[in-house]
Structure formats: C-alpha cells, structure tokens
Amino acid sequence: MDLLHSTWFWLIIIGAPLGTAIATLARLSQKQPPLDLPPGVAPGTYAKREQKEKDDKPRQP
Image (cartoon, rainbow, N blue to C red; front, side):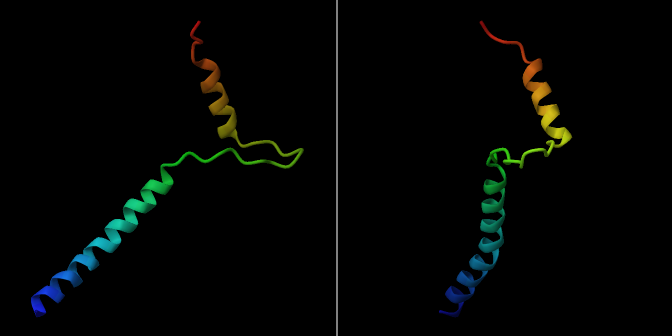
C-alpha cells in the first residue's frame, strides 16, 4: 500500500509542473486583440512593421 501512495505522490509531483507549462504555453499561443489607445497616443513601431508586412503581401484577384 505504501508503494501505491508513493507512486501517486510522484505522479502528482511530475505532472503538476508539466500541466502548468502546457497551460502557460497554450495561453501564450493565443493571439491577443490590439489595444485601444487613447486619442493622441501613437502606436509603437511594431504596429508600423505589422502594417507594412500586410501591405507587402500581394493581393489575390
């Protein structure tokens, strides 16, 4: 009986960080919507880069 308890203990010890890592990566992989900036605030340079990449793609007829 002690072996069963020890086995479950180690499965939880190994599984908890693994589950946490998988959940964190799943959350980070979701694309976030753009932020609503107050009037008069310019977006960062990354927004210009993303817009340029969209403009550079050829349009399909």
